[in-house]
Image 1: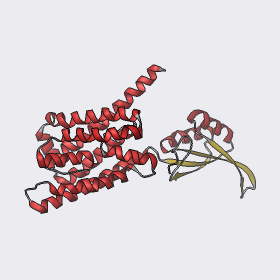
Image 2 (image 1 turned 45 degrees about the vertical axis):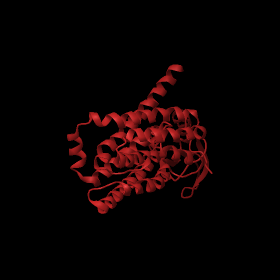
Image 3 (image 1 turned 90 degrees about the vertical axis):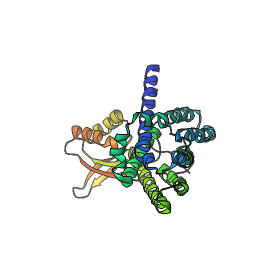
Length: 298
């Protein structure tokens, strides 16, 4: 049991690390080389670097340390441990990753492809990294901490919270000096908002994608075997409803199953094994609350 727990912990931290690498790569390859400003504490730290030369990794660490102290009370020590780990790893990656990535590579993949493509790729990649970190109960720090604190008590998506915060942070890019004057500053502001939109949409897609659920109605004469196998093999609840086929005027039992979308394939294969002639109706549901699904939030 202890070995299993250790392996589970190692897997969780490995996924968090992968998410952090993707997040930082998005910044050091696609965003910072264009001197663009994205959202979050990383965006705020980038503004500080552009204006003062104070390295983004130092600002990132200082601001996150303050926010983390606030979050420890709200989100608990378990969250704090993973976030401290993420914050330290992010700081180190922001400081040293640019040193190991060849400038020619960044020039070819980001600079030469223009700012618009860079903000789209950078926004989507950073969202994927954050979603992987969220999935393991951690955070890269900064405004992610604020988003998770609000999401804990209010049914507001993390992407929407971060988008609102990012509007103000990206707006601060107007103070960043630009060779093209105010025209270039406003252009960079627009690019920043495009990236925030891509990030917000992608984050909600990645985070909620694993939580999508389906409702299945199963019409079969072998409903007892199907219900038993769904309960024992997939560990999902099954409700049996009494029905009547109006055309045949015969009584029937209808099974109702609610499951995660990724479990649908296993359910269909199971049903086919027990009754290839079974009639099914599968529909997506907007939300499922209760045991085994989401908790009801005020």
